[in-house]
Picture 1: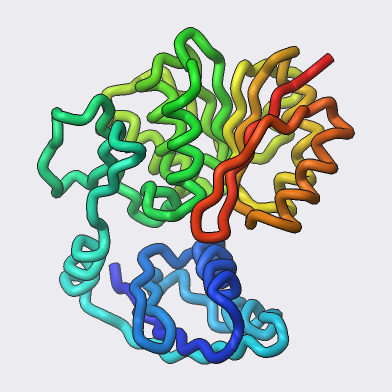
Picture 2: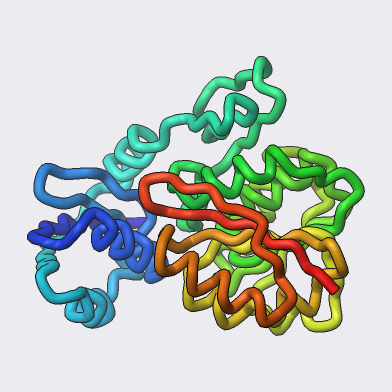
Length: 280
């Protein structure tokens, strides 16, 4: 398979503008990202590159944030080298070691997760994934029924299983992500994860003890009611994919309408993850 390297040059704007752009690019098929002096490089399978879609995304950037790009195809062997050189192991809270298949194991950590992301999002490198995993390492999962909504590679579902969850349902609207979960759960020897392709409609009538949703603000706002319906009293909801400040305030206010009590949040480089408890 041929891959394209797209170099994005950014002028103006704030760091969070670039972060949001990277997240939007991931949603349209870009996977690995590499910092450059005046912007960043992003990589995508050439057959998936859609110039009109990319240009419509760039046109929607806020005033004062100018983004231009150039594109070139790279040989598959060069792509593999780039991918491997940019995937470094990640340690979360001194407890969980996240690595790729080509890294050496580290049995000195209590938990180890092996991820082959391919084209799915979620390797522990992004702040939102790291924040969610930090919360999870502080949470009792033993015997719990867990939902991972917007699962990407399945990294959160895998950690939930390793922390003792008895049932884990992983949902994503991208079939590539669902296939990635199936592969990654085998790499981690956790078979009690079920991956499904779809949206929050799939969870209607289900019940969970813990829901994990690392998506984005707008989707979270749209799906809060579904999460609340699927949580019993004292059920826990962990969300991320949004910024501290106005985004968090908006989500806290909306959650109150569904008997979801805000119990705290974590922050990293402007990104946030929050914990809610279902009451009544």
